[in-house]
Length: 474
Image 1 (cartoon, one colour):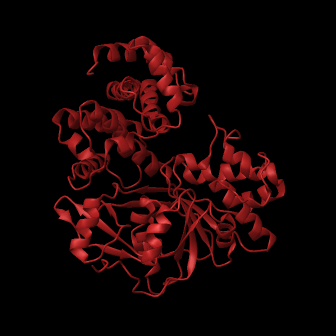
Image 2 (cartoon, helix red, strand yellow; image 1 turned 135 degrees about the horizontal axis):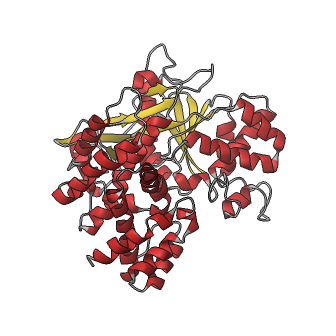
């Protein structure tokens, strides 16, 4: 029996100028296609922006892409069905950091590389509690600072560690620094990355820290595209449409947004403006709009929708009771907490979000969104809740999201299910110790300082207890 055909490269490789850390599905469905579009603009650096991807943990992405010469397929899933698949050829190679960290450093230190981008999730920045830029107790941070007794030539493990050592090599060889571009979904992502890199540099080499502070640019960005998990059914659909068996295919919604701080200096850059990227002086208003209007309601759906027995965003939005709660959040609690970005109508933005959420061909799982809830709850839910509380605006819907989150943790404890959260032990312990008592559960969870230390929780604790005690659907 003959082997199924795989995607193959049809265009000449673009010259590598980008190293991307964290080659997950989101970058392959969002960043890579837009870089490919920018790389194809004649007269604006066409063929100059090829990508070397770096997996910081696992070889899985490399292993599926390498047999296909790092070519793969993306496909937009519209409400009416699958649109025409697109072949992505912008990736030239994939390196696996744990296998050969020095190969990663060599790629990043190459003078031809002008941009290092990242999608490593919030955890990948190794931030400490509160406003600490670096978690000095994190074992990988301790390794990168030389505090774990490992051999000095064993190579870095963290994204800030790789960045710092690569910049040190470039500085030593009088090579201009690369630009650092975070595409992760966290507020002020460029500033967060800069703070982590500088904190590490200041402990290892203060003169290098000073050079980075003055010479390296860390523009902020806001990215938006829903990318559901790849399934065997999707792989089969794409094979039927293209005749190619692509194990690396990624699906995405038709919508995309990339808002980029125009802080690249005078050197060459990809033709982002020709790929549909918005370049603005200040990203923060767009960032906060997305964080609260989209990510906030995604978090709300993860917990309220799961409580109602739904598995995906589209299923939850098809439930009139759940949909009404989300629309009320947009209108009465989230939109009023936002400084409106230039040229934006928040009512229109909410209507677009609702249509995106209702897309039945985007199976965005609620359990996927619920992961790492302790990290997502503060910026998405608690910040607008307490801003509204201080301003005398409604908080009813946001309080219900916090209650639903507490119930999600309590159900996991009762059912002895694992909780995908960096604070899982503390969260589950609080639920076990509460013994089914609403006041004890609220008190135990609100006592977790890494989530609630920055908020006046005494102002909402009684209301949470009453809501939790009166709403026990399990």
